[in-house]
Image (cartoon, rainbow, N blue to C red; front, side, top):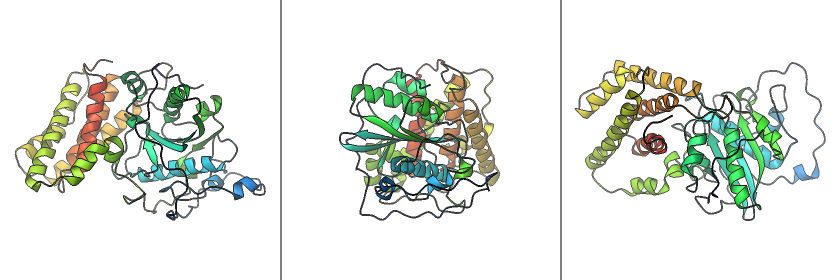
Length: 381
């Protein structure tokens, strides 16, 4: 059953039409991995159809990986009939999952919309407002669902940290397709290791859908993830292109840039700690305050403190993931779950100062905390 959006007003796309599938740039190839053997040999594949032979090129930045063949095994889960656009969506899901393995605890959904202007590839995760972990560089040909500036506060709050990102995608599709009936959510793929499932897409009548469990991934564990290059973008650019360009063009002394970035860090940490402190029973790891104070005072942070901070990040990430909304009907993310999301962002933010500040990632993490505070200004449930 598809989830209904909470917003009656139409949402305008944040940007113009994305480039259609196809590019004169040859995509990077990813060798298929040898997954675990299925319980029984799969049936022989049918002969390739004429439409399959005429499969269009993948979107720029999405490497071919033979997902269709790999997902046909015993671990494939729910899947519609094969389709070239579904193949592209599944490939991107597996690439995003592979790139975020270090982070863990996140599922991805990719929706491909057919529009009068061509194809529109939309991505969302089930962490916060479509959070993208560090080191994950989505293809330039895609856009993030929560970066649509036409979305209302009600919609964003309703689907913040929703455990099954396929349902978030369906709610978004209902919203924009009601506004423009010439748009169609044609293909949806979703990873399934942390709450994702394509069953709602099947029940909602999406023409093509697929579960993409990690065990069926065709990408070898040792393969390099998607790089930051001309085909892929930094996560800040997908969230706030103007701020990304400002930081990239900034021509001020490094000391001033560090001061500005530290001010951003300090304000974000204070926001998260104040909101967490208002909740009974929520324990904040002391190392977060210790490291913040040391960095503020220009003091050295010991290796043990950095290690403790990494552990705090890991624990906050698990706490956030374990409390995602959507496991029960009509559920909305709780203030406690949101505070855990913010504490995970704070720990990541502080860790970015260990070997010199990463200004782009600091800005992104701080904005994720800011999004939560804007959606719930009084920290209500």
